[in-house]
Length: 179
Length: 425
Image (tube, rainbow over all chains, first blue to last red; front, side):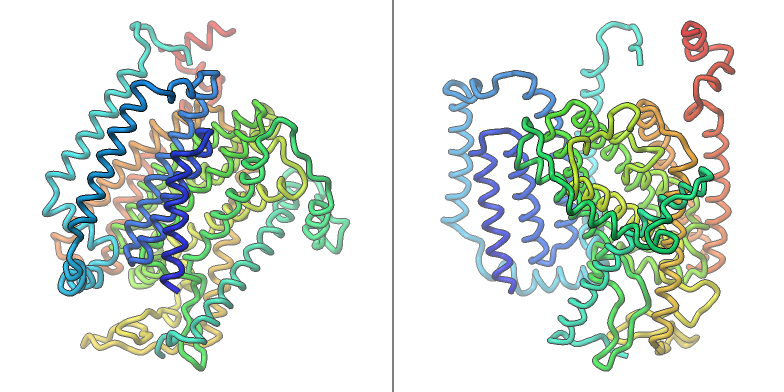
């Protein structure tokens, strides 16, 4: 049963990922992306990482909604985005990104994680943490103790991005906007 | 009483629960449309639908048949696939959310006790937030695919409103999570039984935020900007007819039902029967127990069909009250202006909810330092602090500025608003 579900989610995730890249219209790409992310969340559930699955849907569903708005507000205004995708700088960028990804995949496949590393002691330690603190506590506890500096720095980064967005969105002159 | 063993009967019980909950939700949704029309008629001093069957009891069935038999229209310029996908995406999250809500005390069967919840997932509340963030896709897609500017504006408004109020919704839930220290909804119900107080008292302001954001998330008046008949015809579902139109309505009422059930579960004790300890039962080390005696030994609970039915009735009554509240508010309050919706969401609800989370966390920390145990005294102390916060919030809110109309603004003799109002005259 688990295997059948895994294959189903994996096929949808990979098919969706291909659809994001190959889709002609931006809206289709976005919906393929939602399908991919939801299937990855499903795989997380099969791995009993319920918290990650819920957060995956929560965060990405909201984020993609914003992307959706960008697409329909910017790309539907008659701007010819297909010309941008033809040869030139973009193809160079796309080629280098796929090269990098391929390289990463290659190194991972050439030197896979040893079979024992994710089982045995590590798995039972995770099980114990989940049993003691619940599905959320097992992630929240290390996040706010061992990794709190990294966590706070990430928060600071997001704050900087928000401030920058507000500064960019404000009208240039000192006058107040009519609302 | 032990939990039911994994196997044939476990699967059978699960399937029976899925079937029962889905059909009950669908029937309840059908009769909520009748309730809405009858209550609105009562509020407006009319009669409402009363011709089909006694008191109009068969009206939802007649409506259903009409919607199935009506002609399906398809706008010539719409994108066909996304146009069909819209209603489907709207209805799926609305019906799937009910799966994690516990609706009664465990039911004893010869094969073991059956939890009266379809799926008690370990991330209950987060699952609901995740699904509610997916719910907006149907509306936005429908609005975009219709290729109609009114529908499109409705879809845009839906997305902006959902994104804005999800923040306040999440923040209002943080207080509940801090109280229970767990995110499963069965645990939320159990902690309220153990505290002896429903969370609406110790977390009163969180309840206010939750109700307001729930109204915004379900697109009900006074937050029905995506539909706004007087501005957008009917917004995102302008181009839809027959059963596809009906599916948007089923989705909306299913959302209302789920939101009401959540209000009952998170803040009003769920299936807990008030002033009665006999229904308190929870799982501990594979046994269904009532609590612990003074020596700390578990006391076995005695589940019975009658307790399950009584708790189910309690849950249904609480949920029905909040459904009535949704209808009551819809026919009482006028619609917000769009900028007022955004102002309330970002400039009032968000900072106030953040401040409330800090206040409650601080109070809980102080109580922990003072050594007050989790119990009635703990709850009453929180009730006092929270009550003061709620009073302060309403005091600052009620200055006729945020939800007041032009008339209220004129009362401010100085400032931009007053001069703007004067120049408009």
